[in-house]
Length: 304
Image (cartoon, rainbow, N blue to C red):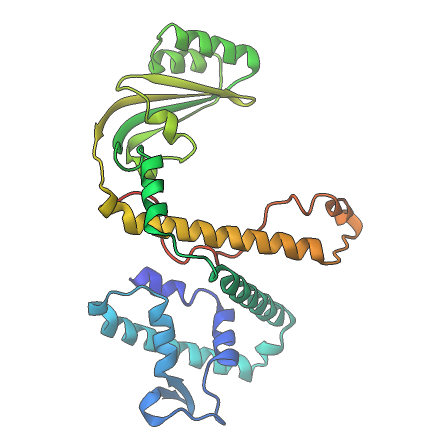
Protein backbone atom coordinates (compact mmCIF):
# COMPACT_ATOMS: atom_id res chain seq x y z
CA UNK A 1 0.00 0.00 0.00
CA UNK A 2 2.85 2.38 0.84
CA UNK A 3 4.23 1.90 -2.67
CA UNK A 4 0.88 2.82 -4.18
CA UNK A 5 0.61 5.90 -2.02
CA UNK A 6 4.12 7.03 -2.86
CA UNK A 7 3.30 6.72 -6.56
CA UNK A 8 0.62 9.37 -6.14
CA UNK A 9 3.30 11.89 -5.23
CA UNK A 10 6.22 11.02 -7.48
CA UNK A 11 6.93 14.36 -9.15
CA UNK A 12 6.99 17.87 -7.67
CA UNK A 13 5.02 18.99 -10.71
CA UNK A 14 2.06 16.98 -9.40
CA UNK A 15 1.93 19.21 -6.36
CA UNK A 16 1.76 22.33 -8.48
CA UNK A 17 -0.96 20.80 -10.64
CA UNK A 18 -3.01 19.82 -7.60
CA UNK A 19 -2.67 23.33 -6.28
CA UNK A 20 -3.64 24.98 -9.56
CA UNK A 21 -6.35 22.50 -10.61
CA UNK A 22 -7.87 21.09 -7.43
CA UNK A 23 -6.79 22.75 -4.20
CA UNK A 24 -8.99 25.19 -2.35
CA UNK A 25 -7.90 28.77 -2.82
CA UNK A 26 -8.39 31.47 -0.19
CA UNK A 27 -11.28 32.83 -2.23
CA UNK A 28 -13.00 29.43 -2.39
CA UNK A 29 -13.48 28.29 1.19
CA UNK A 30 -14.55 24.69 1.56
CA UNK A 31 -17.39 23.85 3.87
CA UNK A 32 -16.13 23.41 7.43
CA UNK A 33 -17.05 19.72 7.48
CA UNK A 34 -15.07 19.15 4.29
CA UNK A 35 -11.85 20.74 5.52
CA UNK A 36 -9.31 18.16 6.65
CA UNK A 37 -6.51 20.60 7.49
CA UNK A 38 -5.37 24.19 7.08
CA UNK A 39 -1.77 25.00 6.22
CA UNK A 40 -0.96 28.70 6.70
CA UNK A 41 -4.57 29.46 5.77
CA UNK A 42 -4.61 27.20 2.69
CA UNK A 43 -7.22 24.47 3.02
CA UNK A 44 -6.88 20.78 2.26
CA UNK A 45 -10.26 19.18 1.68
CA UNK A 46 -11.60 15.72 2.33
CA UNK A 47 -12.33 15.56 -1.40
CA UNK A 48 -8.61 15.79 -2.17
CA UNK A 49 -7.91 12.88 0.18
CA UNK A 50 -10.75 10.80 -1.26
CA UNK A 51 -9.58 11.52 -4.83
CA UNK A 52 -6.17 10.01 -4.11
CA UNK A 53 -7.64 7.23 -1.97
CA UNK A 54 -9.98 6.10 -4.74
CA UNK A 55 -7.09 5.89 -7.19
CA UNK A 56 -4.88 3.91 -4.80
CA UNK A 57 -6.89 0.65 -4.65
CA UNK A 58 -6.69 0.61 -0.86
CA UNK A 59 -8.53 -2.14 1.01
CA UNK A 60 -11.50 -0.88 3.10
CA UNK A 61 -9.87 -1.91 6.37
CA UNK A 62 -6.81 0.17 5.47
CA UNK A 63 -8.73 3.28 4.41
CA UNK A 64 -8.35 5.17 7.70
CA UNK A 65 -4.58 4.74 8.01
CA UNK A 66 -4.17 5.38 4.29
CA UNK A 67 -6.19 8.61 4.56
CA UNK A 68 -3.93 9.79 7.38
CA UNK A 69 -0.83 9.02 5.31
CA UNK A 70 -2.31 10.88 2.36
CA UNK A 71 -3.21 13.89 4.50
CA UNK A 72 0.28 14.00 6.01
CA UNK A 73 1.75 13.99 2.52
CA UNK A 74 -0.68 16.68 1.36
CA UNK A 75 0.30 18.89 4.30
CA UNK A 76 3.98 18.47 3.42
CA UNK A 77 3.07 19.09 -0.19
CA UNK A 78 1.26 22.32 0.67
CA UNK A 79 4.23 23.54 2.70
CA UNK A 80 6.66 22.95 -0.15
CA UNK A 81 4.29 24.36 -2.78
CA UNK A 82 3.89 27.54 -0.74
CA UNK A 83 7.66 27.92 -0.47
CA UNK A 84 8.06 27.20 -4.19
CA UNK A 85 5.57 29.94 -5.04
CA UNK A 86 7.23 32.34 -2.56
CA UNK A 87 10.49 31.81 -4.42
CA UNK A 88 8.70 32.20 -7.77
CA UNK A 89 9.69 28.69 -8.83
CA UNK A 90 6.30 28.42 -10.52
CA UNK A 91 7.67 30.95 -13.02
CA UNK A 92 10.89 29.03 -13.64
CA UNK A 93 10.91 28.11 -17.38
CA UNK A 94 11.77 24.48 -16.71
CA UNK A 95 9.02 24.15 -14.08
CA UNK A 96 6.49 25.86 -16.35
CA UNK A 97 7.44 23.42 -19.10
CA UNK A 98 6.94 20.45 -16.76
CA UNK A 99 3.55 21.76 -15.66
CA UNK A 100 2.48 22.26 -19.27
CA UNK A 101 3.66 18.76 -20.21
CA UNK A 102 1.73 17.25 -17.28
CA UNK A 103 -1.37 19.27 -18.23
CA UNK A 104 -1.18 17.97 -21.81
CA UNK A 105 -0.84 14.41 -20.52
CA UNK A 106 -3.87 14.79 -18.22
CA UNK A 107 -6.05 16.30 -20.95
CA UNK A 108 -4.97 13.68 -23.50
CA UNK A 109 -5.72 10.90 -21.03
CA UNK A 110 -9.11 12.41 -20.20
CA UNK A 111 -10.10 12.53 -23.88
CA UNK A 112 -8.95 8.98 -24.56
CA UNK A 113 -10.77 7.78 -21.46
CA UNK A 114 -13.97 9.36 -22.80
CA UNK A 115 -13.44 7.50 -26.10
CA UNK A 116 -12.68 4.20 -24.36
CA UNK A 117 -15.72 4.49 -22.09
CA UNK A 118 -17.95 3.73 -25.10
CA UNK A 119 -16.73 0.11 -25.12
CA UNK A 120 -19.62 -2.33 -24.95
CA UNK A 121 -19.61 -4.89 -22.15
CA UNK A 122 -19.16 -8.43 -23.53
CA UNK A 123 -22.15 -10.75 -23.44
CA UNK A 124 -22.24 -14.10 -21.65
CA UNK A 125 -22.05 -15.81 -25.05
CA UNK A 126 -18.96 -13.86 -26.05
CA UNK A 127 -17.31 -14.77 -22.77
CA UNK A 128 -18.22 -18.44 -23.23
CA UNK A 129 -16.93 -18.38 -26.82
CA UNK A 130 -13.60 -16.95 -25.68
CA UNK A 131 -13.36 -19.61 -22.97
CA UNK A 132 -14.00 -22.37 -25.52
CA UNK A 133 -11.52 -20.90 -28.03
CA UNK A 134 -8.64 -20.87 -25.52
CA UNK A 135 -8.47 -24.23 -23.73
CA UNK A 136 -4.75 -23.64 -23.08
CA UNK A 137 -5.76 -20.84 -20.72
CA UNK A 138 -8.79 -22.42 -19.11
CA UNK A 139 -10.17 -25.95 -19.53
CA UNK A 140 -6.71 -27.42 -20.36
CA UNK A 141 -4.69 -24.89 -18.38
CA UNK A 142 -1.27 -26.13 -17.28
CA UNK A 143 1.50 -25.02 -14.97
CA UNK A 144 4.88 -25.24 -16.65
CA UNK A 145 8.36 -25.80 -15.30
CA UNK A 146 10.75 -24.97 -18.11
CA UNK A 147 14.17 -23.76 -19.24
CA UNK A 148 14.97 -21.42 -22.11
CA UNK A 149 18.32 -21.06 -23.87
CA UNK A 150 18.75 -18.20 -26.33
CA UNK A 151 21.84 -18.19 -28.55
CA UNK A 152 22.94 -15.30 -30.76
CA UNK A 153 24.46 -16.89 -33.84
CA UNK A 154 24.99 -16.38 -37.59
CA UNK A 155 23.09 -18.53 -40.08
CA UNK A 156 25.79 -21.24 -40.40
CA UNK A 157 25.93 -21.70 -36.61
CA UNK A 158 22.12 -21.77 -36.38
CA UNK A 159 22.17 -24.67 -38.84
CA UNK A 160 24.51 -26.54 -36.49
CA UNK A 161 22.20 -25.85 -33.52
CA UNK A 162 19.24 -27.15 -35.52
CA UNK A 163 21.14 -30.31 -36.38
CA UNK A 164 22.11 -30.88 -32.74
CA UNK A 165 18.50 -30.39 -31.70
CA UNK A 166 17.27 -32.81 -34.37
CA UNK A 167 19.68 -35.43 -33.03
CA UNK A 168 18.27 -35.06 -29.52
CA UNK A 169 21.22 -33.32 -27.91
CA UNK A 170 20.46 -31.81 -24.52
CA UNK A 171 20.41 -28.11 -23.68
CA UNK A 172 23.60 -28.63 -21.66
CA UNK A 173 25.37 -30.13 -24.68
CA UNK A 174 24.22 -27.32 -26.96
CA UNK A 175 25.19 -24.68 -24.40
CA UNK A 176 28.64 -26.24 -24.01
CA UNK A 177 29.13 -26.20 -27.77
CA UNK A 178 27.94 -22.57 -28.02
CA UNK A 179 30.37 -21.60 -25.24
CA UNK A 180 33.22 -23.18 -27.20
CA UNK A 181 32.16 -21.16 -30.25
CA UNK A 182 32.17 -17.94 -28.18
CA UNK A 183 28.49 -17.35 -28.95
CA UNK A 184 26.50 -15.10 -26.67
CA UNK A 185 23.85 -16.94 -24.64
CA UNK A 186 20.91 -15.89 -22.47
CA UNK A 187 19.24 -18.36 -20.11
CA UNK A 188 15.90 -18.27 -18.35
CA UNK A 189 13.55 -20.63 -16.63
CA UNK A 190 11.21 -21.24 -13.76
CA UNK A 191 7.68 -22.35 -13.03
CA UNK A 192 4.79 -20.34 -14.44
CA UNK A 193 1.07 -20.71 -15.04
CA UNK A 194 -0.31 -20.59 -18.55
CA UNK A 195 -1.48 -16.98 -18.25
CA UNK A 196 2.00 -15.90 -17.16
CA UNK A 197 3.60 -17.21 -20.34
CA UNK A 198 3.93 -15.09 -23.51
CA UNK A 199 0.60 -15.29 -25.32
CA UNK A 200 2.25 -15.71 -28.73
CA UNK A 201 4.14 -18.83 -27.63
CA UNK A 202 1.44 -20.42 -25.45
CA UNK A 203 -0.41 -22.35 -28.22
CA UNK A 204 2.79 -24.18 -29.16
CA UNK A 205 3.88 -24.62 -25.56
CA UNK A 206 0.50 -26.11 -24.65
CA UNK A 207 1.09 -28.90 -27.18
CA UNK A 208 4.47 -29.89 -25.72
CA UNK A 209 5.04 -33.06 -23.72
CA UNK A 210 7.12 -33.19 -20.55
CA UNK A 211 10.81 -33.53 -21.40
CA UNK A 212 10.38 -32.20 -24.93
CA UNK A 213 12.65 -29.51 -26.37
CA UNK A 214 11.49 -27.22 -29.17
CA UNK A 215 13.52 -24.74 -31.21
CA UNK A 216 12.67 -21.43 -32.88
CA UNK A 217 15.11 -19.67 -35.19
CA UNK A 218 15.39 -16.16 -36.55
CA UNK A 219 17.85 -13.66 -38.02
CA UNK A 220 19.49 -13.14 -34.61
CA UNK A 221 19.98 -16.82 -33.75
CA UNK A 222 18.05 -19.60 -32.06
CA UNK A 223 15.97 -20.15 -28.96
CA UNK A 224 15.42 -23.54 -27.37
CA UNK A 225 12.70 -24.29 -24.83
CA UNK A 226 12.86 -27.38 -22.63
CA UNK A 227 9.64 -28.33 -20.88
CA UNK A 228 10.95 -30.08 -17.76
CA UNK A 229 7.53 -30.96 -16.41
CA UNK A 230 3.97 -29.68 -16.24
CA UNK A 231 0.74 -30.35 -14.45
CA UNK A 232 -2.83 -29.68 -15.47
CA UNK A 233 -4.77 -27.23 -13.36
CA UNK A 234 -7.95 -26.27 -15.24
CA UNK A 235 -10.34 -23.50 -14.32
CA UNK A 236 -14.08 -23.44 -14.96
CA UNK A 237 -16.06 -20.97 -17.03
CA UNK A 238 -17.59 -19.60 -13.82
CA UNK A 239 -14.14 -18.99 -12.32
CA UNK A 240 -12.87 -17.41 -15.52
CA UNK A 241 -15.88 -15.24 -16.35
CA UNK A 242 -14.86 -12.01 -14.52
CA UNK A 243 -11.29 -12.25 -15.84
CA UNK A 244 -12.39 -12.84 -19.44
CA UNK A 245 -14.90 -10.00 -19.12
CA UNK A 246 -12.15 -7.61 -18.01
CA UNK A 247 -9.84 -8.79 -20.77
CA UNK A 248 -12.43 -8.41 -23.53
CA UNK A 249 -13.55 -5.04 -22.21
CA UNK A 250 -9.97 -3.80 -22.07
CA UNK A 251 -9.33 -5.08 -25.60
CA UNK A 252 -12.40 -3.22 -26.87
CA UNK A 253 -11.36 -0.05 -25.09
CA UNK A 254 -7.93 -0.32 -26.68
CA UNK A 255 -9.40 -0.90 -30.14
CA UNK A 256 -11.61 2.18 -29.80
CA UNK A 257 -8.66 4.31 -28.74
CA UNK A 258 -6.45 3.00 -31.56
CA UNK A 259 -9.20 3.62 -34.12
CA UNK A 260 -9.79 7.15 -32.81
CA UNK A 261 -6.11 8.04 -32.96
CA UNK A 262 -5.83 6.82 -36.55
CA UNK A 263 -8.88 8.89 -37.49
CA UNK A 264 -7.44 11.96 -35.80
CA UNK A 265 -4.13 11.47 -37.60
CA UNK A 266 -5.75 11.10 -41.02
CA UNK A 267 -8.09 14.07 -40.55
CA UNK A 268 -5.47 16.49 -39.26
CA UNK A 269 -3.00 18.58 -41.19
CA UNK A 270 0.32 17.41 -39.77
CA UNK A 271 3.59 18.74 -41.14
CA UNK A 272 6.99 17.37 -40.16
CA UNK A 273 9.98 19.65 -40.53
CA UNK A 274 13.76 19.44 -40.61
CA UNK A 275 15.22 16.18 -39.39
CA UNK A 276 11.70 14.82 -38.89
CA UNK A 277 10.44 15.43 -42.45
CA UNK A 278 10.79 11.73 -43.32
CA UNK A 279 8.04 10.86 -40.82
CA UNK A 280 5.28 12.28 -43.04
CA UNK A 281 4.94 9.07 -45.06
CA UNK A 282 5.10 6.66 -42.14
CA UNK A 283 2.87 8.39 -39.57
CA UNK A 284 -0.35 6.55 -40.42
CA UNK A 285 1.27 3.14 -40.04
CA UNK A 286 3.35 4.08 -37.01
CA UNK A 287 2.42 2.52 -33.65
CA UNK A 288 0.07 4.62 -31.56
CA UNK A 289 1.90 5.78 -28.44
CA UNK A 290 -0.81 6.33 -25.87
CA UNK A 291 -1.23 6.89 -22.16
CA UNK A 292 -2.82 3.84 -20.56
CA UNK A 293 -6.40 5.02 -20.91
CA UNK A 294 -7.41 1.73 -22.52
CA UNK A 295 -6.75 -0.44 -19.46
CA UNK A 296 -8.72 0.58 -16.40
CA UNK A 297 -8.39 -2.80 -14.76
CA UNK A 298 -6.08 -5.80 -14.66
CA UNK A 299 -6.48 -7.36 -18.09
CA UNK A 300 -4.45 -10.53 -17.57
CA UNK A 301 -6.26 -13.67 -18.64
CA UNK A 302 -6.25 -16.62 -16.26
CA UNK A 303 -6.32 -17.03 -12.52
CA UNK A 304 -4.02 -15.60 -9.93
